[in-house]
Length: 288
Image (cartoon, rainbow, N blue to C red; front, side, top):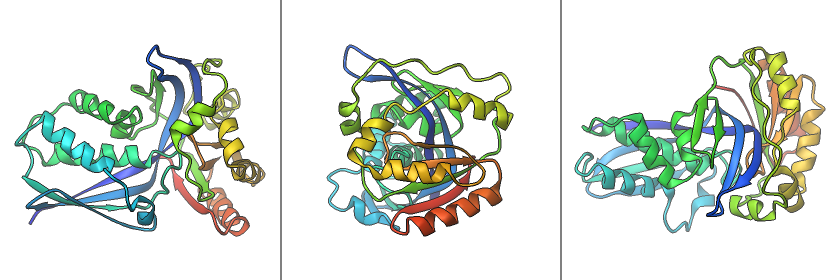
């Protein structure tokens, strides 16, 4: 029996500007998003019917979920490309990333499902077609479909791949508190904030990127800290570690990241953060 596997890399918003709102109420965004080797992983086998099982350290966080986004993605793929997949798939999600953490766990899982289904399918499916389907699942899903460093715009669906990009390391820390994205956006006082500056022409140089990042921000950080004060403490401690170029919250939180130029610095920082915050999830990874 054939077995398919697909990683679902975590996304990290190095910057996230909320610059407006559409007539339908969707928030218009600008940001720089990167992806890491830290990931969930999907495994699929042919079955009599579709089934989803969840394992891994964060599996319990999904218990009782009425309709997982993975099954939604699978249903949507079958709707657009009927008869292109086996009648049933037994999918296992190894949930390695914290849930509702601002690092795109659910969106990454949905995107991985679409990528895996496209590989399994006998249909000739373009990336543009798959991206349109991804957007039906959520604004973050198209960027997770590519899982490459990119500038985002619109509601998140406008993607400009950034290449080359510095080989940087990230340390992530999450206090173990889920933060629903919609709740954070409701807490945001201003829906129209200053736009993100254009990327420097030599963005592949770490020093140029570091200077640029100082002029950016995450507009969701302040409302998130009001709900989860631990975010501020994690950010502050990360910023003081040797070699930290930038410390900030990712997405709608509550995950905090630190950017480091060298692997040895990131490994040391991850160890220190784990010792300082033993009840938090702490991980280290290069940007892919």
